[in-house]
Image (cartoon, rainbow, N blue to C red):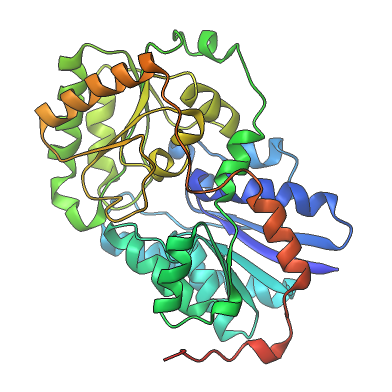
Length: 372
C-alpha cells in the first residue's frame, strides 16, 4: 500500500486533486492522507470543506491557516508559517510514502519544503509553468524541493530541465483540471438555479495580483466599469484570499452585479461551458476554457508568460481594451470556433497514478543535485 499525502488550501487546487483522489480511492494498492486548510475552512470564502465531504472524501487533518482580519503580503507569510509548522506533525504521525504537492499555492509550498527536510519523496504537479505574480516564485521553489515532476506540457518540461532538474524524473502528463471538467456530469438545471440564460452571460473571476497590491481597487473598478458599459449579463465568483482580496471583494459586492462566494466544481464547469466567456485573470481561463471552446478575456499580468491556447484574448487594465475584448468574445461564440487545449486531453490523473506505482520512492532518491 502506497500512502499519498495531499494538502488542499482552496478550490483551485482541490479541483485538480479531486480526479486523482477519485482514482486513489478505487485502487487497492493506494491510499491517501488528506489535510484541509486555508480558504476551505473560512465561512466567508464559502466553507468549501463541505464540498470535499460531499464528494465522499475522508479528511484526516485540518489546519487553521488564516485567522487575521487584514490582508497583506505579511499576512500571507504568517499564514504560510502556520501550515509549515503544523503540517510537520501531520507528516510525523501519518508517515506517508509520497507527498503529492501541487501548483503554486502556499500550503503546497509548505508541505513540499517539509517533505524535503523530512526525507519524504515529493512529486510536484504542474511545475515548470510561467505564471506571473508571487505564484511564479512559489511554483519554481516547489520544483527545486521536489523529487519528481508531473508537468502539464512540453513547454513546462523544457523549463524544468533548464532549472537543473533531472530529465528522467520529469513526466509530461497534462493538467488534471482537464480530467475534472471532462468528468463533470452535465447539468441542464444549472441555468435555472442561477437565473441565467445559455450563452447570454459572462463569468467574472478576477484575483488579486500580489505584486500590484496597491492597484487592486483600481483594477477591479476598471473591469466592472467595462462590464457595465458593455451592457452584458455577468455572474461574479469572489476571488481567492491573496493579498489585496478584501479591496476587490468590497468593490464586487457594491457593484450590484450578481455574485457567489464560491461554486462547487459541478456548478462552475456547467456554468462555464454555457457562458459567453470568462473575464478576469484566473488560471481557469488559460487551462480549461479551451476544452469547451469558450473565449477568455485575460486581464493584466497575473498570467504573464503562461502557455496560451488561441481562445485567450490578452488585455491590460484599460477599459476600452476590455470592452473590445468582450465584443470579440460575443463574435467568437456566434461562430462556434473550435480550439485545441495544450494542457491535456483528460487522461492526466490516470498517467499520474500509474507513474506513482512505478517511480522509486526509496530513500536513495531524496538527495538532489542540480544537473549543471
